[in-house]
Image 1 (cartoon, rainbow, N blue to C red):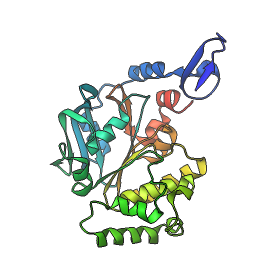
Image 2: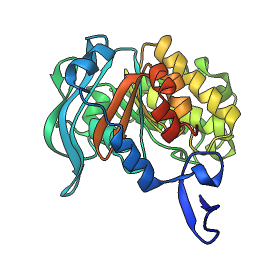
Image 3: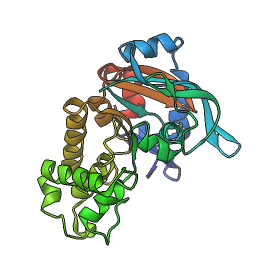
Image 4: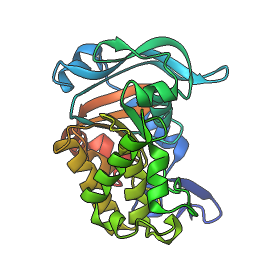
Length: 291
């Protein structure tokens, strides 16, 4: 978004936030100020405490990126079973790269990713889904529009041990979500935005994962559908015991949802705290919450 500066009508400013044009910060300025608030002492012990000293998924000293380019620089992360973690930060901070690294989409130069103490760093995405129980829920528009709702769900179980088991999991989803059951034999392209996101989440559930990597759950959705989606994720965490790690550009919504929040800046961890504590942090509010 571009706006005109009140001081210089010809100057265009791009950035995050809300309020008058005098308060809009450029993306580079958000990154600079976010780097300036980086706290000393965001160490492994602090992260372990936030995860209840019993990390279900843990990242230690991760250096990762794409090709020869390093995006993450010695990153640590801890999240407990049935906990939720929201990653926020300026554009280009490395948030999605964390999800990509967990799932096996990046080049890992050094460091370790472990689940329940088992090293899963080098596993492929198929192994992460089938053996490690980690599913990646992509940003919006990842459904197959000309396939039926049922066919989309069956695609999510392509790694199941048998077609009968896959079909049984799909039937469980239809029993759980009436909205999808009513559209079972209809093409996915007729679904509303909220129904598409429900389908995307449900497709990931066919493999019965216990860790969900959720990339920008609110992107492209109307407010009423955003609330519906976060209600679904809440149930998956609190009723089904799923561990959820999400990237969310709507920092307020993400931190309201999550048990833990991390602020990423330039591929490093700048701040980590409980979600409600970061919501109350004035620096986080000024830079990422529009106030």
